[in-house]
Image (cartoon, rainbow, N blue to C red; front, top):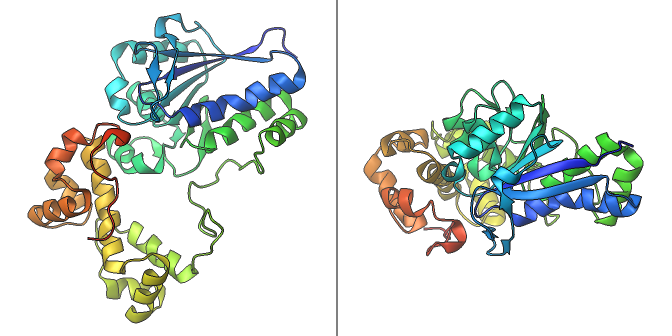
Length: 333
């Protein structure tokens, strides 16, 4: 065992995800408890004033960014909504300095946007929360983006957030201290199974509540998701999955609660909303990228689904979602 503890510097931005961040730290806390020594230590810093508000409204005391260790063993950037708003010069410069010093850099939820802004993900694989994947791909096309729970590549660790942060932490704990302590820590926090590198954000077999979705329906949805810009016709989708239109309609009504036409339109609009609120792409380009040939039609159905036009959503949609005056998703229009 090393003489000095493994030091983790967590850099949080306003409205960061508290559960994701504590889920990452908790395996190290448990490891200290089970081992009976402070093998791991961490500190929470921010460029914003203390106390810092998390996305659920809770507030935490944080130390200033300038008080973070000069060379920690791991730097973790934890960000959630509108990460670009907090990627200021001071934070980017500090991250680059840590990189030059050889510190591994990790990102939780949308923290990869900040690492990418600093130019620290070039030539590496990365992931972000699925809600932000399209925006990340548009902003940073040179980065090898995946839809995995977490990635570890050449001193860069990225994680989509949520419970996946605990998986990532347990992998690091396993690397540092071996299987026995990692297993004990996972058992202590009732983390039933350690998901491996390469695990996807959305496994395609069973839903979280245990229900199984018919394979033919999953194939149809994957076909739609792979063709958001091309906008396939429903007969083309039926041909692609070897179903009649009546069969496809019945599957969607039974398992999704809406028609395939409406479902296809809504996932295109969901992608559009990410691009509207998370990028500065022109509205005309967003409409085309999401399969709408008419910008007038795009604006109309966008308002139907989200309660306001895309031009207004570009401004108001950057407010963290818990403070918005309209629902993120509306039931079928």
